[in-house]
Length: 381
Image (cartoon, rainbow, N blue to C red; front, side):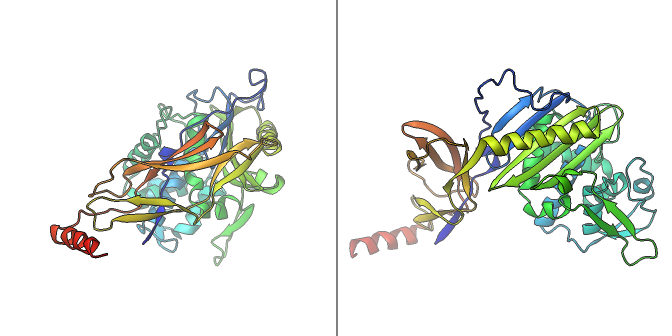
């Protein structure tokens, strides 16, 4: 039996790349806080005041979208499900898609309203759809933040409207952006420059993406802008070129021009300086895990996705290799997701990266009769 190797997000240890002149380089001089991260490995390429707790404005909606995408994956909702707008959701000010009390709109259109128009009303309507109440949804947001290790974050609402005690950091925003991008279908929405809502009605509503980089920067396809008078201009953006996807976050920019120019500069730096070196391709065999006293005696492990190493362009790759090191004496029962070893990447004798290897399925303990039969079969083999 072939099983897929699961390398969970938590296993990708956060790394920072040593940079020549890192003390003087400032890719986002006008930003209050900023970070540049490789989306695949979570490696930090550049950061400035990245753990400062600041108002995130509508970048908050990245977490809202993440919980929506998870609910879709888990089958709790479907894109075609209708979402009814409450009086409370319709009362939201700021950026909105002008939902009316009692109006129904599909989950997919609500996603567009959040991703493109930054609809505060759509965010609350989806929160109520998923959790019943806004406050219960906020509890889910904070629980997810804790799960992701977002220690600089506390959410009070699902849309980022100014309120005391609602804060995040450039670092944490990059972390939740990276998690959202694991749902690759989200860029189908965040990468749109324009679309329409209420297409079949007498008054179709034209959506234009608040993130202008999706139109003007090659490879950009998300993620979320933000602005309040307190937070100033914020952006969590992502772009992909030649297999390298990066996330750039800026907070506290004085104008949209500064915001877009400095994120573009961060992208330019990443694509000029770095590359993704393939370690394991999707579907590639990783190795075999032997399971003592299990219903299955061994598992053939296969990579569920490509695994790459972030390297500076021009780096010698001739002596890069990887090894699977399994824990000693893996004995059933084994739980799905249980750590069973590590995939270690070396350059020469130096360890470059370690990925935790988790069991892709549970292995129950074999019955006494099965073990006896297996032993007897071995005698006559």
